[in-house]
Length: 376
Ligand SMILES: Cc1ncc(COP(=O)(O)O)c(C=O)c1O
Image (cartoon, rainbow, N blue to C red):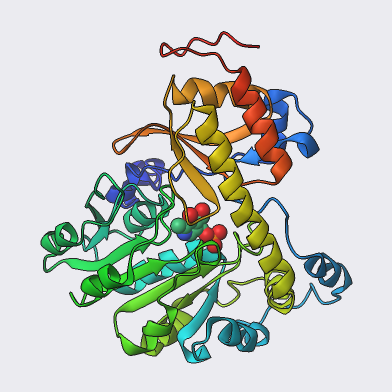
């Protein structure tokens, strides 16, 4: 082997990728179960903003019955475009489906970024924006939200320069749970930069700018079936784009980006909307009950949320210790300790029995400010 060959492909790798921070993904149920010794079916998973009621029963039935898994799926997703158009209320020339909204975040950045172009990220927010920006060779410009977690519109405007291509706003935002008012979104749209409004939690909030997309050449809305429809494991999302951008996204995406199972699941979910909306209502009601119970207990201080999770600053004690205490009991929540998210937990809203188990476990937690566990 020549010396050049023996050095392998390392020297050919994009230098900017070598230091990339990996996205912190969820831990699979089986691994969690092994770690805490609680059977999978008894785990209380409140760390992924997933839907505790699962998918519509019609999805399971349709998937079991389907006979053509050996045939490639339709790259243009024709079967679900009509139902999506009806659900969103915007013409299908504006809509592209993806393997979760995660895929659409990546595709949008591929469309707009040239190496070192800038993307504005209003932290704290969803971690995929800086991750996909880095993978696509862009640079993230961070504009912190204010202490109420509102987007700093003037700060975003001041951060824009000739290399700025995209602004990401999650509304409701993950992990803070608050939505961004339409007037603020429009102020950002007026800058002419591409504004991506990520409405993954739209169904728990009811506020959307989807109908404005056809009026603005630089507004994109992303939606997901992972949360309200309980399809996180099947990967289905969609974007609502100005039609010229939708057309380009269809051209550059991998052809079979939405698999047959996901497509069937989307079709059946939209056909069983009333059932799923009933579960969304139950989650919204439970959000209120969980928040009231946490407030009364006094260990955590739940913030107002318009999504299916609640961000909770810890009043007494150490968030990490509380998370570890809950982990051992088979209850999983998300823990943060970074600027604007110091000593906080994010709790996804589960079923009423999940709330009760969480409150009961927290009541037994006796860790002091030093975080030492004293309860059992
Ligand atoms: C704000 C936000 N956008 C997008 C996603 C990802 O959605 P999907 O499962 O459709 O890729 C999440 C998932 O947690 C999220 O919180």
